[in-house]
Structures are given as C-alpha cells and as structure tokens.
Image 1 (cartoon, rainbow, N blue to C red):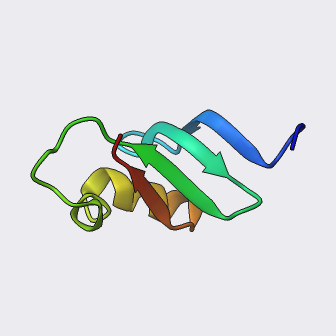
Image 2: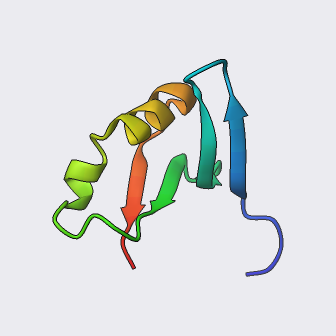
Length: 70
C-alpha cells in the first residue's frame, strides 16, 4: 500500500514552442495519464479527451488519458 507506485504528479514536459505543458498525474506503471477537469459542465469525458490539450498529451507520451471530473 505504501511506497512508490509509479505515479508522478505535476509532470512538466517541454518539447519546444506550442508543445509544452503539465500533466496532473502520470501513471507509469499503469500506462495512463490522469487529468482533472473542474470546468466544462457541458462536455463529457469522451469529448474532453478529444480536445487539443489532451491530444497533445497523448501524442507526446503515447499513453491514453483518463478525465477526472470531481
């Protein structure tokens, strides 16, 4: 239960102008990116996964994204 589980928080990536950002959570052992969304009341997680921001994350890391809407 305790210890390193392969998750990294607030992961910065900088691959040049227009291709940089912060990941909320990168789960290396599970192979997925978690992204918290606090706005966008009219958008489903599936729609949010197709936004330019999330597509950029998927392209840079080669991993799927999971939207968390608290």
